[in-house]
Amino acid sequence: MTASFLRRVRVAEIEPVASRIKRFRLVSTDGRPLSEFSGGSHITVCMQSPDRLIRNPYSLMGSPTDPSSYQISVLKVDDSRGGSHFMHDRVEVGTELQISEPLNLFPPAKLARKHILVAGGIGITPFMSMMSELDALGADFELHYGVRSLGEGAYCRLLQTHYGSRIHVYAQDNGELVPLERVLGSQPLGAHVYVCGPKPMIDWALRTATLAGWPDENIHSEQFAAPPAGKPFAVKLARSEREITVGGHQSILEALEQEGIDAPFLCRGGACGQCETGVSACDGYIEHNDHYLTDAEKASGKKIMICMSRISGDSITLDL
Ligand SMILES: Cc1cc2nc3c(=O)[nH]c(=O)nc-3n(C[C@H](O)[C@H](O)[C@H](O)COP(=O)(O)OP(=O)(O)OC[C@H]3O[C@@H](n4cnc5c(N)ncnc54)[C@H](O)[C@@H]3O)c2cc1C
Ligand code: FES
Image (cartoon, rainbow, N blue to C red):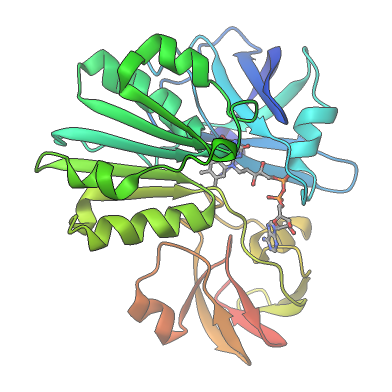
């Protein structure tokens, strides 16, 4: 991602939509229309906190056919490193922010006979634009949305009003869980399933779909989770002969950025492949937290996705 890929927006509206979730409407600051996007896309929001530039991805929720403004919803997380708290506590109507152009790593499959959308908590956000797109196309879809309680689930009523019986909400505090086995067992051949939510839910849904005989290419997921923290380690840059330290709660990409070193990225979530970097040496083992490299590539120890993965050891030498 480069500066030309970024643009300024102003916050035009902020609405609390559930306990700990706020919706933000962003408009262009220079009168130029915002770029069109497709269902499932996200943008990266840049936030200048006192000690660092935070760059967090957030899914676009509005209608893809109406790029007059962008809408995102942000959950305030407990173990935040700053981004979600910045959006909740420091951003007001009128605040200007820098955002990236939209990127879609979670699009609905064009040829699917039916789309089964499975959301957990804040994982509802990419489905908002996806449903809008599918509805406009007249495509067959249904949403299964698990929330902790109805008070914590965002947009339940709005979705039920808009899409009627295609929306199924399950509140955990009422003892309700998404009945995924049953849902997946009654779909037509050619249906695709999409999951977004907390990591355990995604793992469970992927396992359930595979066990139910769904082909890999019909199963899609997007994970919001951050990689696990670890111990600090050194990164040696083979080409520039520099050395930097990566903190325990920091990615290699973030440590490079902090030192003013440009490194490519798009999704910052281990999915797009943009930050793939060659490894020339590593004195420990690489903890691969991405969903991009193949098992064989991971086992080779020759590549690392620097937005998500770290090492268990003292130092790694990268082809940078
Ligand atoms: C494609 C995509 C779309 C998303 N869409 C949404 C959305 O629509 N709404 C929404 O609320 N959220 C969304 N997210 C999540 C969002 O980007 C942030 O992760 C979330 O808001 C929390 O940010 P934070 O800055 O508060 O905390 P984070 O920086 O995410 O930190 C949370 C925890 O993770 C740990 N951690 C984070 N990064 C690292 C690291 N590199 N190394 C070690 N530990 C680390 C921290 O120590 C902390 O414990 C999305 C994420 C992705 C990848
Ligand atoms: S930036 Fe997309 S995989 Fe790292």
